[in-house]
Length: 314
Image (cartoon, rainbow, N blue to C red; front, side):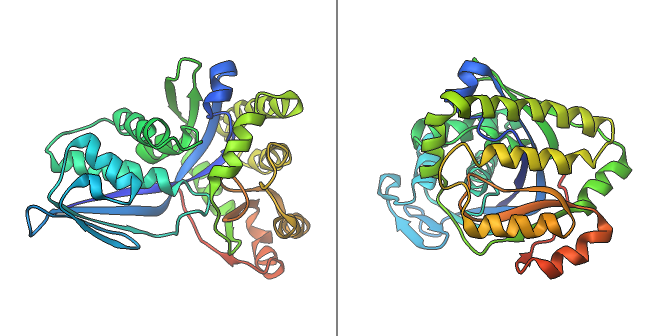
């Protein structure tokens, strides 16, 4: 049996610039970190050699890969020409919560099945193949940041170049700064899951139009600014930059925020948060805040949401 463990990610700033409509015109950039929440994929030869068995929220047993209903499983198995296996997926956090779960799922399946075939693949190949599956084959209206974050792990600055290539540059900080970053991040579950596709379809159309294009460009400037601040160990700058980025992000498409999310965000700012954002495309999932340690209990008391403790995955 082969088991892969693939991290989920938290994106700090720059999301949306990894969508082709934007980076093919301007180039894009994102800062994100992988976290200690994971997607687990196990692969084992099927007992009945002619059957392919898939176990996720449902169970599928098929004699031909073309009969598979789950589009991601079907696309990967077809790409790698594999059948006669039993694959089980388990996750720490449900899909639709803004942590890049679909891309962690895709990278995890690819990694497991390449290993099953006895092939070593680089992080770059895992990421690019996951992009091919999700964007080119399944035609999901998403960007590239999640696939690269899942494949590379760590705290990185991602550059999305006009020719479609991606550069991955680790952000180097002192150990004490990494610890401070971990300790000052607070993540809360809004109790809602969402489908990102409708929001991302609208955002993809908007990011090259008028004020929204200018706002996306400003988010890229903030991404470069945050990179400099973090590499100079000024971790507290994350709070203000998260706040400025959230104000810009909420203009990019309808459905990114709603009255409940806005109310929670306002309560957080009044009770210690220096800044924050809704993770993922929008509409639900997790709220992330940067909060000094001496204000965190105040935040927990004021914000009537379930906290999800996290640390950075390196």
